[in-house]
Image (cartoon, rainbow, N blue to C red; front, side):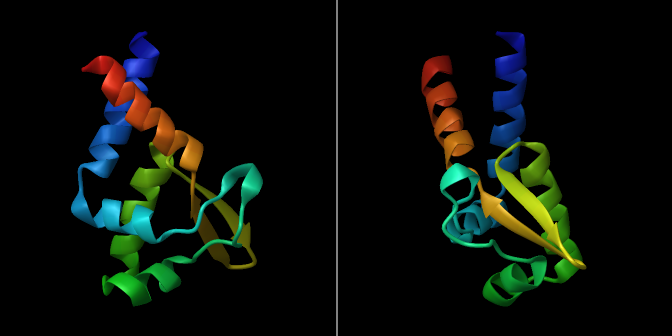
Length: 97
C-alpha cells in the first residue's frame, strides 16, 4: 500500500499546479489507443503562452508522475497524456478518502 500511496502523492503534487492541469486538458490521449502523435513543447507553448523551458519543466514533472508519455522524434519530443494513469489517480484519491 505504501508504494501506491507514494505514487498517488507524486501524481497529486503534479496535478496540484494549475498550469499542469491545463496542459493535461490540452494534450491528446496516448497509450495503446493513441489518436494523435502527440504535442511538442513548442506546440504546448503556442497554446498556453509560456516559455519553452517552463513547459519542459512542467512536462518533466508530469512524466515523472507517470501521467504523460513521451517519444523522441528526431530532435523533438512528443507528449501524450495517459488516460489510464489519470483514472488511477481519481480512483486512488477516492479510495484514500
